[in-house]
Image (cartoon, rainbow, N blue to C red; front, side):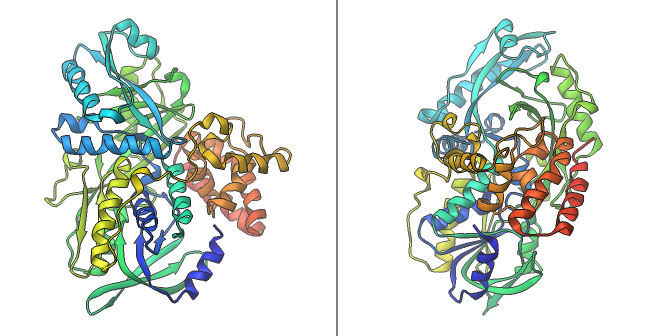
Length: 518
């Protein structure tokens, strides 16, 4: 995955691509893998880095959505539960069974979450992860010893799945290449090519070289998430806005706030949302919020009231009350919710995905969530192939093992998140003394992982490595800043850049990471 060579080949390639996909998040990557695995000639273009936006800022859950069941959206729950099961089979090194505790307090509507979770189990069928069951107060506190005991009647335990979102995104990029597709980051689409009012390709700008050129394609897919409207406006300036961004904020705490392996699910917060406190990479993630945002941004920032909301609710249910100084990192993501009625109540807007085909032949796929990315991609490629006049080819992604597939990830320790690539990382660490040791005492990441990210995962900046190839920025923003110089030095050697590049990278990363600190 040598980006420079790929860009040179792209400039010189005279052939027409079957699919050009704009957007390197979950939806775009899923669509690219879907198309390439069917044998279509596929190109994916991302304006920044893969999963830079919403797709690296989720609650890290692959779930059916108990909340959607309560809303009566059984179809969405069924689809999500099925996709959850498939994803666990196809990426077992990244997707794990996670137990959740729903505590039952005097003021909660406990009965629904007993009966409702039994329905949830039944809907999951053979792809279920384990049965739900009622717990006594003592059993509940055994699972979550730091849960507030006052007025606690007991609880319910159920099972969903947890994953690492940006690591899955990188594995999807690698899977795309495994199927002869091409994905390039830092390649911004600046316009659409047209002939006879039909879209025939894209104008692009290489963000690294500041060079513009054109690429021809039989069909162009707009999978840009929160930036969906900007691509549709390129096609037709009169197109109505369909995306209502909704901001979800998470805070990250030390594991001492919630020891043990179970997560907490609070069914109803003050604003009607579900709140999670989930163990992840030896930290606790607490989230999320649902705040309407007017304009999309690549680097959204948490608002003070959102942080206060999360701290207040965490204190309500945990015996150890988190203070602002306890927050290791705070991150925000924007959901690309589709609102045709102009509703600003983002909590009530459907999480179903939306597929649109404009008169020009531009195909837009948006909405949805990580859990259902594969089904979204399947639907998109089915429709886009018709638009392009391509031969009909059946989907095979239900049973497609993603790059890194490894059933027993313990065999890959300490690089289990890399699945089958762990052997290559171990070799890099063995060949260079000290490269298998953590760069920072508060985080597990090693020089071998930095080098691997550059060589095999198309990492181009310090941010790429610390935010998405590893999760240092989310797990401990301050420690990640302290790692930046070492990471920049390792990358500079691999990328053959100079001291000025290193200095600029450290400065830019420090400025960005400071925004993740309270």
